[in-house]
Amino acid sequence: VKSPLFGARGRSDPGRSYRTATICVMSTSSSRKRGRFLHCQSASSADGLVERFAAWQRRHAWRHLSAVERVWAISDLHMEHEANFDFVSGLAGFERDALVVAGDVCTSLALLRSALKLLAERFRHVFYVVGNHELWHDAQSDGADSFEKLLACYEAATAAGAHAAPALLGSSSGGVAIVPLQSWYHFGFLGGGPAADMPAGHALRMMDSGCVWPGALGGSSTAAGLARFFARCNEESLSQALSAEGRAWLLGRAGQEEDAGREEEDAGQEENAGQEEGASGGKRQKRLPAVERAVA
Image 1 (cartoon, rainbow, N blue to C red):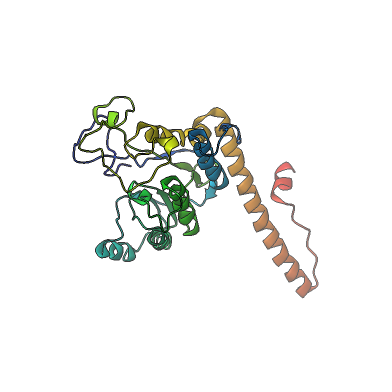
Image 2: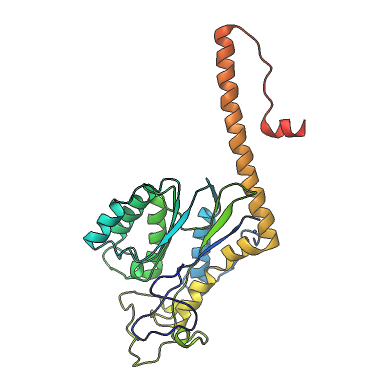
């Protein structure tokens, strides 16, 4: 999924930067052991900030969600504009579908909550990843800096009913994994080279100057350290989604949730049957839970 701010590798447009608001969609056929990620010395260091992000994802990752008919994608809604807000408000007929919102919804946290809530009411599942505009910083409402706002955006998304961490759609045997990935531009990207700081005096040097980044990440939206930070934020979720160990863990977790769901259904049916027996005075053999029936 691409949106203005980050296009195909090597693409160059001196008037714009590009962000790949990436969602990996894959078969649930894929983790590094949870908790084995980073041991940081300082919460304010780059390692410490990566670990804080990873810790947030661990709390929300790999929910097992119901299947959908279609997955749609959209970006750059810019809900500050009344026409765009009206467009979202008028969406209908997507109750069986999922939507990927690939960044640049708005700059206000309050409006972000409202926008994602609107979308969550119109789609079965909504997946969200931040864009650069969400991370423009308002000292009055957005915490200490744009990193704190990054976490606040994802908390707001979760509270609105959207998903900002990897999740499983459908059954463990035939579903897909949707994995929101973090990314940020850097100067080397314009020519397909390695991560590099934007040179002093370059026309894009002031890009996203509305963001306020900690010194550990380079202190600037055009610092290469920021792009490296966002890339590192993906390491754990990609490892969980792609490794053989993660494949087994995800399938096992999904299977356990499915078994739990079946047991709850069986328990409800059993309770209803018991009530019927009490009313009629008859007797009926107790049904075995799903796991015991399988063994039998």
